[in-house]
Amino acid sequence: MQPLPNRFEVQFDLPSTPVVIDYRFEENIETIVGRNKEHKTTTRTIQICCSGIEDNLHRFQLLCLDLDLKSNYLGTASTSILRKQLNIFDEVILYANHKGSIIKIINLEDIRDRWKEVKNELMEEHQGAAFEEFLSDTDDFLQNETDIKKFIQSKEMYGLYFNDCWGIHHLHEPRFEGLEIMLKEPNRKEYDRHSKDIIKGYNNDSSIIWNISTDNKTQECVILYKDNQLEEAYLEIKQTNSKSNYSLCLMS
Image 1: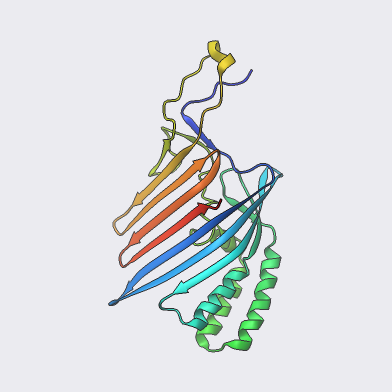
Image 2 (image 1 turned 135 degrees about the horizontal axis):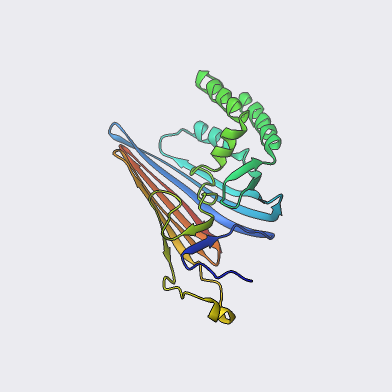
């Protein structure tokens, strides 16, 4: 017998069948250093391709179609180096669980090989102690799969999509502190067995609002879902002498 839908549950499902979706990710960071304001903006156009479910995990391919990096304090050389470093993640293939947590980077060795090529190119063009330290730090980072997964799922990369908020939520029992779900159609009808012939699934179109505040940091996040698809997400973090904005937008 089909169970009655729970009117207090909201469900967001990652794609389980092949689909291709394009998003624009943007990062804006403003930092006050002395009397100066430093700005850095990174914009990516990302094609997210889900090929379905394998071994109970969602398989994704992330393709960076365009990357733009601008800064008022980084020189041309530094900007070029950072862009080339980011370009090694032009293609990321991964497994994620039903909550959106990245479980495994499938093409990790390909990413490492890309870095070897980029590193050789950079060594022909640059030198100096700071540059050597940058190369060493990147080498160490790419040897640690856990660190790479955290980076891919960070707010600076694709964390607004792989946000740990997929799956089932209970309206009165938030999964995380400071999290609230606002339904587009909040007045859900309560079904019983006598009305089983007219039972239908609830509309889960809604927004997740997730705010966290401490003595020296505030974090405000809004995630919008429609037709079980993530449409927009916005995260703002304010700290002493710095403000960071991260956004995701579905491209038509």
